[in-house]
Length: 498
Image (cartoon, rainbow, N blue to C red):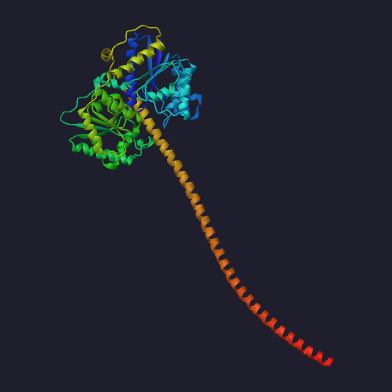
């Protein structure tokens, strides 16, 4: 039996990543059917890139790789699907990806990257070089990207492989998640505003802190209400985004009923978005889902991938920069989008599938003849998402909670460390203060001594002056007496001579 291992970020609590995984699975299954593979002929296993854990990234202790090595054993194809697995600026995905490539090279497993996001390539950056060098060790069959084609070319320059500029797999949401699409309420016009975590803009080089962001969301909600829309704050499930939404409730008194929490599964996200008349989002995938479902949307730029997506669908003006942004400006762009809803680019969506079939055929079924389904046949034969089972749902919640606990523990121990540092600084400050007081006391004593010496100096000067005057008087008197004696002696001498 052939074995395909799909790697995504689907084990993260950002449901956008779970959407990618679900759509990748559906497209791969369709590709296998298209290639004539029977269900008992091939197995597809989906795991997270994070199966290479952070502990390994931090220590490079090979014992942390045992589970990844076991999962990879006997694999005929390692397929990275949809996720931004080259990210390096403030995430460790790049090292996890490079480690998987090292393992694939050791086990002679061919590799495909399908519709991945690619972060900016920097020639002198060791993290970028780490990925580029790892790519050259493996049998790289294919690398396609949803954005960053030029950047991907720099990573893979000189390699003989299938390349392509394709759509994100989530553009197939309308087919794969058809059972979960809600009908919108014609009596209530709703706008969904997807938040980004506190300081998410700052972390991506945007001069827009969480207080500025909070001000924008409040202004935007007010603008929506002024135009007859009911605004809702929501997230795509990322715990840090939800924490910021809770912050909006607690510190800015946003009504809880205007906040949608607990987006924990792909079907939750599809139901939430499909019930809206318009979407405003910082996160990328709410925009992509809206595009697939025919719902007008605008994005707020926090990462270049937002620009790339809206440029790709022919509306670069709908990716708004934060410089000078206002709630009115955002809503005006959404109203314009409502008048001109872009149609899904079927050719670009089809490229995602076509290249995937080509790559799998080359890696797993070389020489096999097949008739490639056209786009219509593909959309008719795509399997719909079966829903998140109870066990999988509990695993998602457990993973989300555990990551939240990691954040809490990190904050707690950082607080302890800060407290200890503050105590040490306080003790040093107290010691310095005591030393300063001692120096001050010593200085006062020295000043008093100096004053006494100054006074003694004055007294000595006066005594010296007095002695000098006495010496001068004595000297003058002695000189007079000497002259008188000389004169007297001279007179006596002169008398004797006579």
